[in-house]
Length: 352
Ligand code: NAD
Ligand code: MN
Image (cartoon, rainbow, N blue to C red; front, top):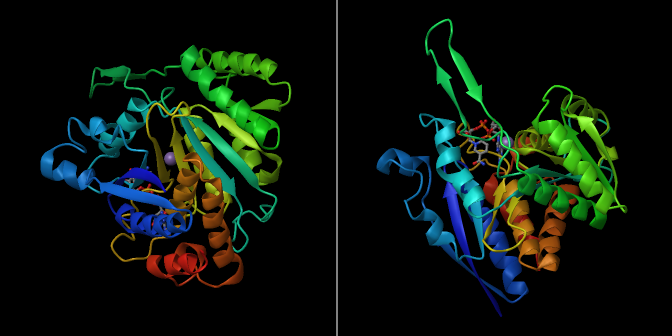
């Protein structure tokens, strides 16, 4: 029996509704594969911020440093500025645990309607690799002459050789293990310091990976191509901001944000990696049992993969595919009438 300790952070809103669904699926498939999964739940959230003044305790990272992984729902709550939840919880975990790869697979599943008619199941299967530790998400900058006509705001981006090289290396390796194609998102015509540097390092890494065919596209044109012809892409690598935007765009192409999973990976395994659905806390539907748990369940499947149980992870996705392809059970965001529990129950019924 393999033992794992998982730190769970349900967070706010529908985060608290989709995380139990992911746990139920993990428990079921874990039992079948002889895995013992123990959970420690942490109430780190905007709710905690309102009550105690911080998203997580001072020693938060130390409390989860020795867990095998972190499973997060979503954070965000009306009345708490979004930068508080991001900089008070998500970014400290991503940076503190050197989770420099944000992996977002985008697959069109049979039975999930895409708003893009050319996005067909079996054809669209791409992965966005987002740099997760530096880039445009930076606190370097400032504001002067506030409230005057001269008001001026500067926001710096930070790109380091080590930080860019390691995420590119991961992306080229991944492309080598998948379809052998890599697209780099750039904007070196307009952003004249960081993006040409990014492009140079892409070319350097490419020289070390002759098995991967690669190209680069300006972010604006690339966004259009993902909508017009998503099937042509295999691995797309981008900076923190570009990767964030492209993965939400691609998730929408694949049928919606409620379906999309993500993994914040520390590839060296010095620290726990974190798995979370791409969506937020969805205050507009929170508390009503309507949330689609698929993004969280898919993220849990990625966690199983990362822990070395690819077969268990694949079984979860087979069960999900089974529900969507051969039953009418789906949540309202996918045009159905099922609630979170009913959809989860249907997935559970298809697991061994
Ligand atoms: P959101 O993803 O919460 O919601 C966008 C829309 O999609 C809403 O209409 C929502 O009802 C719907 N939706 C999202 N997930 C769904 C699901 N699983 N099932 C069915 N419908 C779903 O994004 P938002 O409205 O921009 O943000 C709400 C809050 O969440 C904000 O505070 C934001 O900062 C936060 N947020 C957090 C994360 C995170 O925790 N990683 C990510 C994005 C946004
Ligand atoms: Mn995003």
